[in-house]
Amino acid sequence: DPGEFTRMLESPFAAKGLAGQQPAAPPRATGPAGEATRAFQISQQPPAPPPPSGEEEQPKGPSEFTRMFKTPAAPPPAPEPAAAKKPAPRPQLRKKKKKSNTILWIVIGVVVLALVLLLIFALRS
Image (cartoon, rainbow, N blue to C red; front, side, top):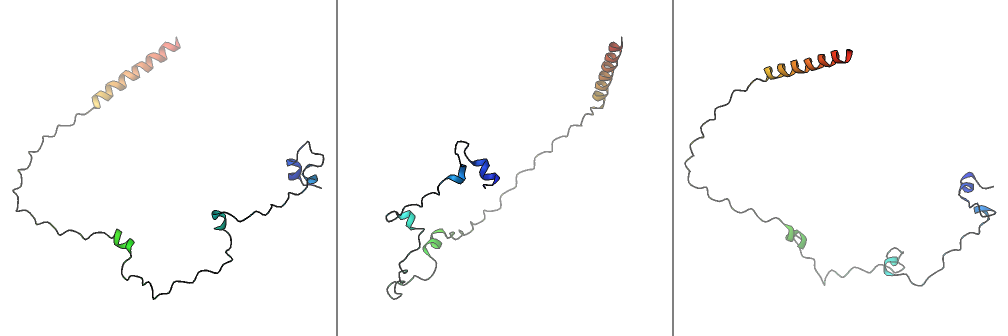
């Protein structure tokens, strides 16, 4: 008896649904695989032996990559110029006294209060 999930996915046109279907055929064997496919297959050949160490010696010291990207030595410091005369200091600017906005805020508050009171009395009548 198929489960709930199988019944939910079966086609309404099939008499037996998914349970009556034949299993899928196994994939047919193909010829030799391509280069990309062979990269993921297990190699049947033994690994190649390492080259004899007597023929090619590895250079000692930093590798080519290290030599290429090595930061260059810092250039020698430049000689300091003779003591230059300091320019005269700028005259200080006079600071303006900060104006107080208290009177402005009081006037705005009185106008707003008058408008609110006027609106309240106009709507009551």
